Amino acid sequence: MFERILFATDFSEANLKILDFLPEFREIGTEEVIVVRVINLNRVIGVAGGVNVEEYVEECRREAEIKLSEVVSRVKKLGFRAKPFLPIPAGDPVVEIVKAAKESGSKLILMGSRGRGLLKEILLGSVSEGVVRKSDLPVMVIKHKTHVKRLFDRIVYAHDLREHSEVAMKYIRFIAERVGSEIILVHVVEKGEKLVEEKLKAIEEELGGLNFRTVVRYGTPHKEILKVCEEVDATSVFIGGGHPETVAEKLLGSTADAVLRHSKVPVFVAKS
Ligand code: AMP
Image (cartoon, rainbow, N blue to C red; front, side, top):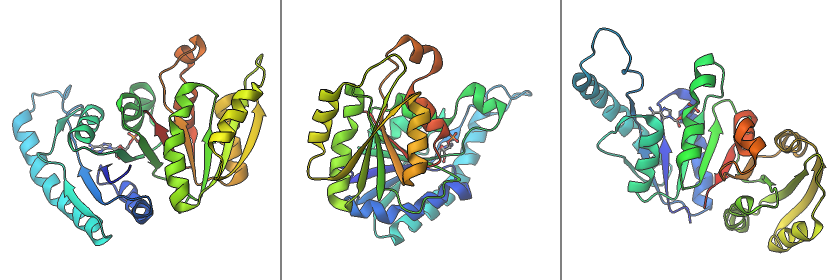
């Protein structure tokens, strides 16, 4: 399921810390890691004074090739087959990361996130959010400042009892059967709604045989999900990243967006 994964790197020290999590991917069957670096042309466009884009890209490529091969050797030392994604793409990082994942036949995109701080990021959106939105493949986002040391020991599975949460099930089962994860199934009943017990029961049945418990909360989904993550000391949270379905989600952004933005623990977004 995760034989080949794509690691997106901006070469920052914080991003490269994600390599410390790679040994855990061996446990879930990862054999090959493709490393992608995108030359960000969003930065060039709009610069005054007419930059020669071709020259700029060539220079960036030369620099990036050296750094990429360093990252690739670090990955190889961890016991994986590894290669850089070549030629080094130039363009919009979101578009190019998603394309590289598809073209390389990767099964998961592994990437970092600086978390939002700058007004520019709040207005333009971040690379990780863009990838999560555009990708058909699952994406695991590890915040650069996360405190967790392992990913799959204690998984919070956020389920809103709708279909798009269900897509995470197959990944959770696959991982939990290999790593022996503890799973905390969290369902939040929103204001004005009632708990649909039969649906919850059906989901619990699907988790049968795994080490899981259920937590039902009442309130705003992303807030409660994040609270539970803290309470149980989660090592990651799994969500379904469907498109916004309700009017409120379209206006305010979906729960998936909010969890991704505010979570301190790594977020696995299942797409299909
Ligand atoms: P964010 O803070 O959401 O913009 O996401 C930062 C993460 O996006 C980094 O940890 C990388 O995984 C990825 N990323 C950002 N820029 C690039 C780039 N130019 N090439 C490859 N990956 C990138």
